[in-house]
Image 1 (tube, rainbow, N blue to C red):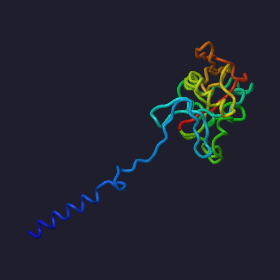
Image 2: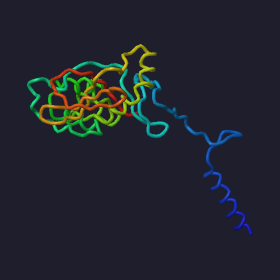
Image 3: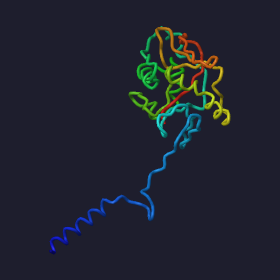
Length: 208
């Protein structure tokens, strides 16, 4: 009989050990996660941007508050094909250029790259991590401009330049002399094969 009592006591101790920790009189604690919608201002420590695309409640893409106007590449390198031809993945395109070429000759991608932390920019193999700034692909840029009304409202409220009536460089190379530039015209996304030594606007994007 004593053996049976000891066995049940052991079961009770094990059950108590495996019981999830709960606040007194409440449910188990669930860490708080911020949810985001298109047009929301994202701020986390020193990281800032505006959400323009979401996949799930807590993840998506955001765009930089600042922009600039630059060439995709300078005239001396316009005939150089980099291989950054992905129409969907700007992170991949940016990595190809930053890993194989001097970014001094590729001003648009160089500008986005320098937004990342010093140790990543100067790291030996120069690869940008998934959660770093990069120049959007033509498709990602299309998503941004399609949602520009919500994004512009937030940019304007914060005192930053808005997106309307501008042509933006994507990171998607289209051939020896061209890359995809994207604009919103009459409510439609227009993607143009443009000479890489022209100056268009540039915004950086990143995952969150």
